[in-house]
Structures are given as C-alpha cells and as structure tokens.
Length: 102
Image 1 (cartoon, one colour):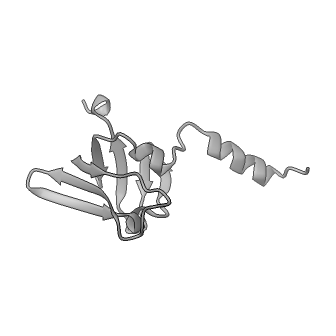
Image 2: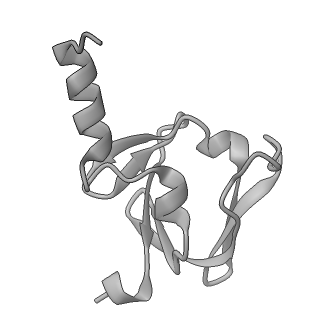
Image 3: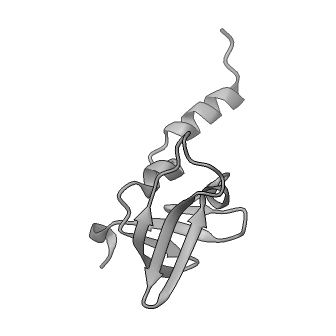
C-alpha cells in the first residue's frame, strides 16, 4: 500500500482532539452558543440514519425566544476550531455543558 502525504495529513487531521464530529459535540449539550448568544437546550436529538432532513433536531430557548434547527441546517457543518462549527447559513455554533459555563 502506498501512502501519500495528503492521505497521511487527512488521517492525522481526523485524529486531532480539537476536531470533534458535530454529532459528538451535540451529545449531552446543556447550552448552545449561536453567533455569540448562549441559548439553553430545550430539545436535542443527535441526527442519525433515521433522521430526515426536515426533522427538528434542536430547540433552543433564551427567555421568551425559541429557536429551532432541522437536520438539513446542520448537514455539512464545518469544524472551524475552538469548539465552533460553521453552518451553511453562516451561523456559528458551539455546544456547551454546564461544566463549561462560568
């Protein structure tokens, strides 16, 4: 088997601790930061093979404000570092647990 530097780089990138898959980051999140605003997680379902594009996977609350996301909005989210994911819409998300809120 011949291994190129490109395939080595790709394999090493996938093993970095700071490159967490979106589904893993979502798991057990108590809060979600959307474009710098922290919302409480009301409902959270990690997308899987049984989740359709228009299924709601996140409902977030901040006071009287409620925001929801469907799976299609999270598809193709790009990890951009520092625990942040960039959605196709341009929204920047971070998934937080109670232990990370100070």
